[in-house]
Image (tube, rainbow, N blue to C red):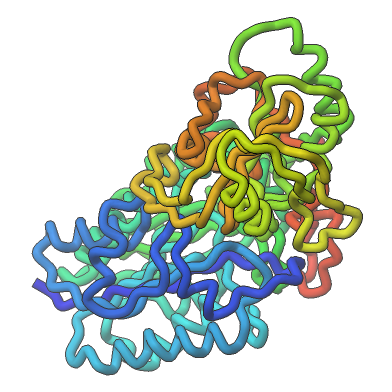
Length: 494
């Protein structure tokens, strides 16, 4: 039995977003728990689809003694403030020092965190942890599928284990895999790591593992991760980060250096060979409206419009209204949209009560250029307190705390409103307001890909719409300054 310290610090940073992640953002719960320190950590993450939860469960089944550190996460946004990064990093480091003798450390990280003063924030955190525990103590971290994996991360960690799915339905499983990898290392396996970075950016909406090319590529990864390899992953990267390490990578860890390098190089070569398959397919708002009209005569499953550029799961604010306004203007019927973050509108709806009509200027509070509120008299259809449990594969077990919520109606459009931003990736968000997504003709979801895990089965068709928002879907349109030489900002077409 080994004594293992367990902690986590997660943030996916869109460096093009002007809204920073503050210490208060990490303190507050949303779908995931708020900042938790000490003994409460294990209970806080239990039963949720999170890497830390999977690690704890698996490590305990392997009879290890776990010591809690600090765990926290915040919604994707702009850079993490210096204050937040330094305070939370200090908590983790101080907790480690207070642990006494340890056999290993596990960290639940994202891999695409950027702080105001440190571009490679995950690498810096791992370096500080390594400085505390020394070179002989194994340090294993789980990483998000969108990690911009740096050489400092690979150098400071003994092993890194990444998700294999997008939507991320395997987060807890990734933590369990990290526990098994660490278990092998603690039993005496001597491992090395190998990292190869790839030289083009992959748009987020082209990264889904439900379709090729990544569906088949990830099957290859899973088949190849066998002894003497303890970890193997393709990480497509988070493209909205203006840092030198931004971009896809292939990483492996194992005891046979030759096989490790050979396998990683082969996968990187195939990732380069299939570059053109990642080409972006987007619809303008006008094109999406045209497609809805063409489908109006046909009954069946709803058309989903993915409002990707305002996805709060990638740095959006969940409050742009252009797509919803267009649907109202064309008198679209049986539309369910959300989730809009507007605490003032939610509060006024609660004050008015269910069944009342209320004049609102809905959305556009974050100041996205060119955006304005949807000003109208709305009917309040349903109200909720924003506390519910996720039921879909991605948010499974998540204990949501979204503040007062309301379902508003304008013409044929119903809009779910919350007081805290959260991407629309679980049907429970709408069912909390007594709205059944499958009963509607059109769903407008503030999400890029994660919605597919829970909504994909009910969708008749999915259109990714290029409506306004800070999460620019096409990386080629972003004003990069720090990418490493030779990086292409979009996949080459054949």
